[in-house]
Image (cartoon, rainbow, N blue to C red; front, side, top):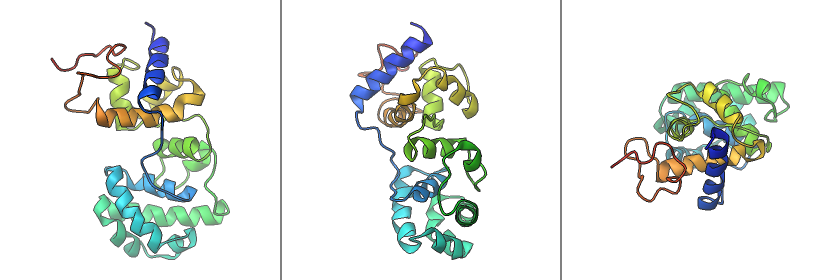
Length: 212
């Protein structure tokens, strides 16, 4: 089985196991997903959702973020870790969105990467979930599973993993594929103790079994 064939098989199997491929982060407006993703760095999605429920209530518009002090934002998000840096980025990002993009989240990689605190992972998530564009979100689950599934070999660089997957995954499937990888990584192919017994990808996984 070639990598391309395995990628197709994995894509189809994941669609069967996780038919609803949705982002775990809660949001209403496009910039809220941008901000929630920034908060998710070194923090669980579950914690971020708890924090943003208060954050987006207290600061309901981009203008309110732009006008708030970094200290006030930091106080709300302090349980997310790196909260001072994240507060600075949220405020600066709100200001840039208002002053340079008319209050709209940009729909292209180049402009997204100009925003404070935004890297390729966040930009790809926005492009896929908000704008429906082909996107590979190379987060920790994606990187771990891409190695275990043989799409890359001993590769930790998210940019290189993203490039490898773009060559293997159909563009129209790519964004949902990454969401399904997260679900699969949490339920079955965990970092420390992968549950190979009963794994839905066992038949096509070159690492199977990881546990005896």
